[in-house]
Image (cartoon, rainbow, N blue to C red; front, side, top):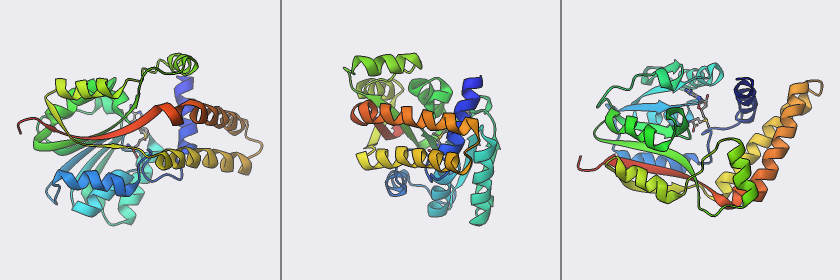
Length: 253
Ligand SMILES: C[S@@+](CC[C@H](N)C(=O)[O-])C[C@H]1O[C@@H](n2cnc3c(N)ncnc32)[C@H](O)[C@@H]1O
């Protein structure tokens, strides 16, 4: 629990300067979203919606409505502020809660957005089980998930195992999509520039904060954490890990 709280505290600082809190540019996200046929009557469900930026892009572009679920008070407050500042508050309802407690109605949404948050459902496959029934006929799912093609260097495998992190290859993800009667319509993979930018923004945010508060012991620990992340990223992750964003639809809809 302490670890979880510490991790949340680290990412509350590290993600501070991000718009989308994942290695994906606004333009490439919108490229996918434009394939979904959204309009002002569309309903979106955004699981682990963070600072609300991806939902905001959708509501601004399509005039749709987005239900945002995120456990963080900091990020849901940020999302409320963003929607209010942009005059879009009536286009969203924002719930500060554990996604596991949010009841996803059947056939209720035109798009489910799950960017980097499938773990909240115990993984990619179980998340798809929920999303496949909560989308309406012709509805879509946009889901972001990591993959790594085997074989991985042993030291990186040991590192992942120490976090119980089971990084699958893209074939396993594809099988999970097929097994749920879903059709893959579009696949994006984060570019090296998107990855570098995403990681570097985190390191700089942590460094800036620690520099502004030199007497804060936790921030000095976070600096060490960021250095460890740099090492893992530059040695392994940058070479072996992909971040995929898939656009899916139910087969036969
Ligand atoms: C990597 S961020 C992604 C945010 C957003 N999807 C995006 O791409 O910009 C992960 C988000 O999941 C949220 N989160 C973590 N555990 C959660 C839970 N149990 N229920 C709901 N949200 C959760 C975090 O607060 C964080 O905002």
